[in-house]
Length: 251
Length: 251
DNA sequence: CGCATCCTTGAGGGCCATCAAAATGCGTGG
DNA sequence: CCACGCATTTTGATGGCCCTCAAGGATGCG
Image (tube, rainbow over all chains, first blue to last red; front, side, top):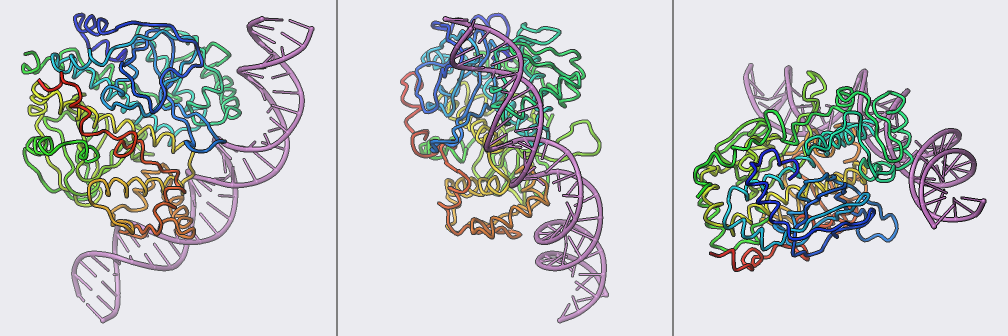
């Protein structure tokens, strides 16, 4: 949703914010939502950083490793899934301290009945997850670990920028090399070596709590990062008018 | 959608089928829908097999390789995306001859206004794509090529079974080793060696046009395949009642 | 200032890419 | 029915990326 902000007018933004029932702070390293759970609410990330994860080796006792399939920045509606699909099929883990807001499913149901315009925006929001997954599948197949990391850094920076949390030189983060390993599909040891390469090559400098990026265009080129798949700017952008275009949608 | 059939009652099925405007046959090896396109209709796959693909190296002239991020079997609603997102961010390629049906976006708009129940089902359908992508991200990270192939075979077989096209012993296919390479994120040469391993180990026997699977449970175990993520059966199934449960949804 | 967490480095081995070339199967036309 | 051309499949050799196992160093907190 954060990524959809710019495709909403002010009224719509207010409507969405009014859907939030209550909010709370959660510690870092927690599992906020668990695969298999049935929830009465959906969640919006207000502050902090979260990972959408799957546990590998469902039935194995050992070999239980975590796979991060995507991440979230403030403003993202992180689990519309459990509204439309009923049972959540993945986990949502906090990275560092986080503030979340809860939207009761009742409220979403009302939206579906009364507000096709907003429904379509929410729908689009959930499709963005799929788009990001697709991009990641491609990158997993074609990039080596240093470039995967660079891509992750690029996407984080870009998405923070989209929601007004940008920083020219990089960004602060509660991510650790272990978490990066979960995100890039590599071992922590290998992540460490990959980070060293990025540092040496002047692409990005990751140190506990901070990622410095000296040259953003260079980072993008190195990682083959293009922002198309986020549908925020350019030809693929969802413009504000879009869902309104159709007269039938404003009954 | 094919994968959602079992969560629809007869009326709903009829409603969906009536959305189809016209249909046609398309040759194999064609690109039916192209990334960047804006379409007036969404498409349902009626017969045949299709791949959802991204082209690697967007701007490179050489090194243009295809990445298949998922596949589709008959009954699947293959591009609700371009309804909710306006511009398609990936391609849809045929594998062998295919029959498709077209649903005008006008009709979908009407559904959104008049039929929250069906809207929710369509929404859920589009979330399944994301769920399948997530599973594939995890498998890419944890499985070697032979096991990835086994997983692909398992999912194809399972999904064909779901829509009543199952076959105890395997299935016919127009896939070639090149296409398998696009799907598994490996080179054709390596796919060939991986297939040999599967054949030797008695897991699956792929030969031009046909995949034989002697022992399905063994295939599943080998590939760590569990069908949860398809939300078709078991705890994660979308039951028919689900979207109806909520009184607000039947105005 | 001691402990836990996190990071760093080294050695050896397996999986997979690349380059190169040959064999097999398939459809077409003679 | 055979011959030909093309797509597809198969095999070999070499090298790079990343995993595993193992141990040591840094950082930060109470």
